[in-house]
Image 1: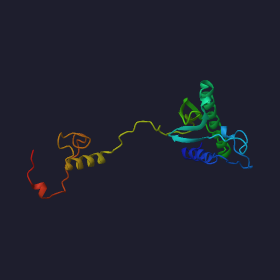
Image 2: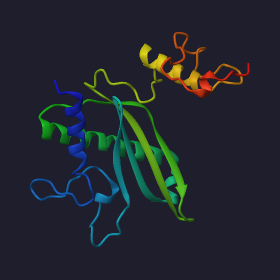
Image 3: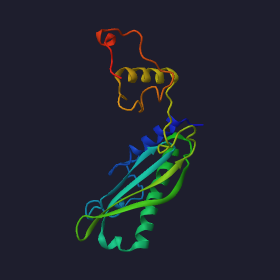
Image 4: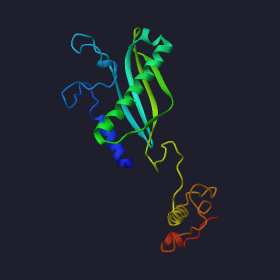
Length: 204
């Protein structure tokens, strides 16, 4: 079974060959399923679209962006379906190329619906940004990026923080706060620091 590092490296290698104009081992253009691949690259007007991926723990977020005529966006049902189909084509491409590159299968399970944001560039052109999350199979013991962090400070670090905070009098007004004896009961003032200020009487 492939390790987490092997999966990440495999997907990253696939993404290295997805730029516009990329060629396969036979010298033919690589087909992903994007709009820019349609028509003649010289005679027809080029369509601006592309994709990239983002690792979010065991989740792979596929991001797709495109420049489209405003009239295409107004076809609400058809428009959203085409965006979703394009992202799914990208996911299928990644799995196919991953299999070809590593000899192992890659499982990508869609989670939820795609997110689509449309912004006007002019009265006739729009810029579309979308993404969809896919759960990566085989990514064991990998935490979600959105998972809450845990306080993993050991007792020695807690005591050290409390000791320094007490010495610096960071909680002078109320005696409470993130640092200090209230948060670290076992902490104490340092005993190896002596000076004139330590010997002077202090106001309560």
